[in-house]
Image 1: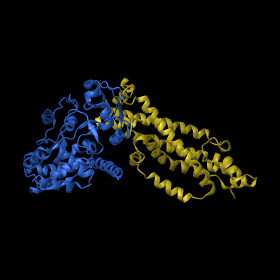
Image 2: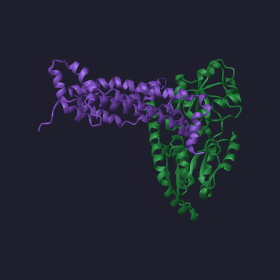
Image 3: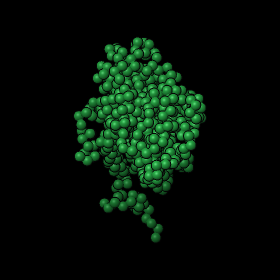
Image 4: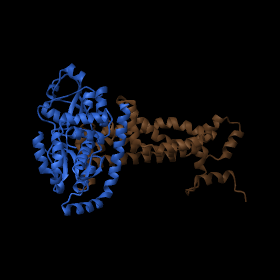
Length: 305
Length: 244
């Protein structure tokens, strides 16, 4: 059953990405129109909220949308716009005005060479790196960032709890993750430079967790808010050297409407905790509830609706 | 420097010899996936196609099935099969998807090759006492060979391009660099890998073009005039003069 669901998500994601890619080329002229109409008057009018083709991101987007609606804004939802390359042009042009983002990954998009890793440094660097016309509101404590995980069996057998413990292990280590992990600063090279750990790299794409559980790799790059860290009993290895870029949930907004939205969205970010984000993801992947229902309940529970 | 120069520089950079997937290994695995997939598809589709062409039975079904199979999106199929068969069988899952992609053109080449053989030639073979198996082996199969190789050629082209998708599920093929390059926004890497796939496709296509010439049955090429007239007319000319 879960396999079917994952398949559905993968297929839906792939389709959505294809559609989004197909659509973005033709949407530029329209973007200029809406940008002119809204920007000039000072009245935010309709707020277009976007989201990635990633279920957790869509839940946060839905929370933003419902919070805005509760405050009297007219909201248009433009969810599932694929990945950063697909939606950043729409944000820069003002076609989409509010988007849940992740500080570290967004910073890396604009400044691939960045050396900031702690949440506050990353947030400060991000504010400098953003192009004119885009701004971020307050960041949330909830994060969804890269992390290295091992199975509980592996952790117990080898007594590892931290990346530093991997050095000197008499085991062939292989890291699984998306293909681009090989080139990231926190990829195999980062493990070697910061922790003195030699690993081979295996591109495991969308099946990284399955590969870890099946044993084709023994270390897996999983997002920290992924419910499967709990459901598959994975152990997230500590990162004492701060190798991973902190990536907290942050609302990315069009600068023209930033002030209008801040009063509504900042309390939402303040209420969203790391555990809270995992709980939201569990409701989606395990309980299979719609993002609209999950968002409505969450806002009611936090007295934000 | 323009993008093409960057892409060429990427291909010949000494860094390509190291990393999770050295370039030589990428090309090798790309070719291996292609050759194995087309070979397995041929083992299934050629006998089936010959049978359909020889008996004339099941043609409607084969046309419908292979037509429908062309519409199956390969990317979805690769991911689906990996999830269904499990992550320990990624090579098998990807190969299965490519085999399914390669079957329709080979099947079409096999049965249309046999079907295109002049009925009078077959009647003649039957008249001199050949068994059905002998007709298929010594008459229909050789005469249908150019069309069959055409089918193999188009299957190979489709598969060599589609093996790119294997890069989504593991360290295989030139697609790995494209999948990685899109995420790290390294456009010279994307273009470099894409150019190599084009080169592979052209080389394989040239091999098949050569094979198609060589495979022309002697009887057919003997009847050919120096100027390149269509094979059908030539073949008919000497055996059956047009009724006046």
